[in-house]
Image (tube, rainbow, N blue to C red; front, top):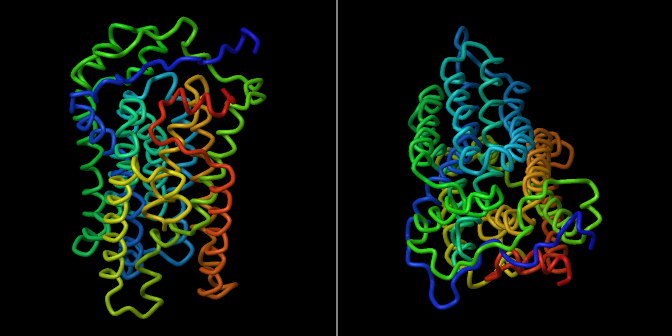
Length: 420
């Protein structure tokens, strides 16, 4: 290996082997960061109760037609795709903490624009802004959490990202049962505002501080999060952030996890789950449910319960087993985001995670925008059989290519891909 791209032969931070860290503020920091995924879950779920409400209004009140309704549901994913690119850029330049703080601005602004909307273009503009924030939060929050967690609880804390997403969706469904779409948008401003307040008191991740040569600050962050820096070793010389270059794609430690990360995001969206989440009320109305809102809330509750189960068993069962055996809320919901934050080396993490998030949201746009077209072409049962076929392919891919990261340090995961 040429000296231009030194290998990361030791972890930047090594967890103590004698006993687990005593500090519990790492859980508070995780909750603060996970309010970002809660906000983007609410943004995703918002369209399900809002679209039927906007379709029922009579002129001169603001009303959505069929075409505008499909764009209202799908445009958030376009904003999120752009947010994935922006988040990848911010991650390594502004840091993990500041990136989370900055994404609160388009969240609050977007929901405020929707609240004040008097035409369709303002609705779409507000959705685009909230989508931009979704893209940044969906990238930065998993990285922040994985870098503040020690290996024994990284699966548990990393699964909180998807748990908060489905909780946000459920909150949108339940609130949409009783709130009109404008007041529902007002409620959407609450989680990002709370995240802004809490994250101001949380530290930057020790990993990022060390790449910026801020050793004292990194040790202070460790003491805050874990209660002690006992058992940690000073990072080796040359482990600092290197920056992304195209030549790095020749390294197996870069191209292998990149292929896996992109593939996991593609398969996650081809399961069709976002189409169901975005249009749950409409799907249940077409299925002749007496109370489509109640059916949507039931789906949301099931998602939350089984994602919580996934969080509890993630560090025991492992990522690969859950991907191969589960349904969505236990495996394919939380694990692609968790693996994305674990498999990339520090010097390419910003760009690589940005590419994965861009892929995820672009696929989400295609699935949500064309879902109704596929339903018309293949009939509803044909559309769901198609997604079932993609689920089978995803299991085969997992068994063949995805490594187990349970209990490994981030450096050990990188060493696996490098063949060390």
